[in-house]
Length: 333
Ligand code: UT7
Image 1 (cartoon, rainbow, N blue to C red):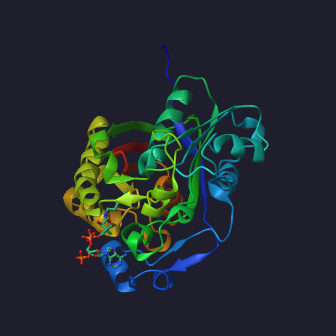
Image 2: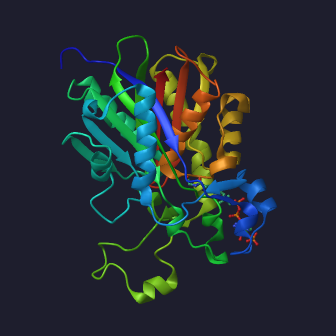
């Protein structure tokens, strides 16, 4: 390849459902408490869709907000990448629904299923399309509706209190100045598949799901919280260091780390291991819980809107989740 383009994030935005579910609301369905949830996770409330809607409905609104922020029109978007594990239907993924609803041209559109790391994965893929010159304006979205898949009985409480619904989006463009996605770093370790997974319906089984499987609760997400936690606090600092090292940056050069919002205690541990205060590690988990692929673009937008970083600053996005997969991106804003 001769001359690579640079990719800039030209606009960002997010959207969450109006319905607020407080910790105290969860107490009516399961044996849990506001104190337990706040102490173990830092979450005070999350958004759950009120009725039907699906991830595409949140994705479309987040995309509109990001397009407005970037001042791009529907006819300028030439690729759609949606990061989600909760597409409206089993197939064909939400990106084509987004393309249709936004009135985009007959452009390429595909979904990426990489759980909590998926937005950084999608950003990395989009970055390659811009760099190669194949695309000019890419819509990258992280969108999830987890609430309709949760076991809200006491059996599922270790998972269901953590997750929320939401969507965030970014517009990628060829950079014409200093702002740039400097590098992205992607990892996976598939031997941990069953530490955080949703088993069925599954192509592995002939009928995909049976009455017996439903009775056993195998249609719900299952998590070994301690194992996920143990790996997360190790992988987050590693992948942040990887992003800094690749660009000859030190932690003093980084204005803000935007981690996937999985648990406040994980972020606090990351801050401690990185030798920084929580001022440098953005957190909004108290408001939204863990929104899987949506959490980073939602956090990125809120951090920008709150003035946590400005043009020319270096920031790092970092994610860890099911797979296990983890990833980071170093960005000059
Ligand atoms: O997006 C990436 C994926 N997710 C994560 O990164 C999450 C990683 N893990 C975690 O955040 C934490 O492990 C949890 C928040 C899930 C759990 O915190 P913990 O401190 O690891 O608690 P634990 O699982 O060891 O459970 C402690 C106790 C257990 O009771 P016993 O066995 O000590 O009697 C659980 O049954 O807390 C009980 N428990 C609950 N109690 C009230 C589990 N969930 C709940 C609940 N309310 N919702």
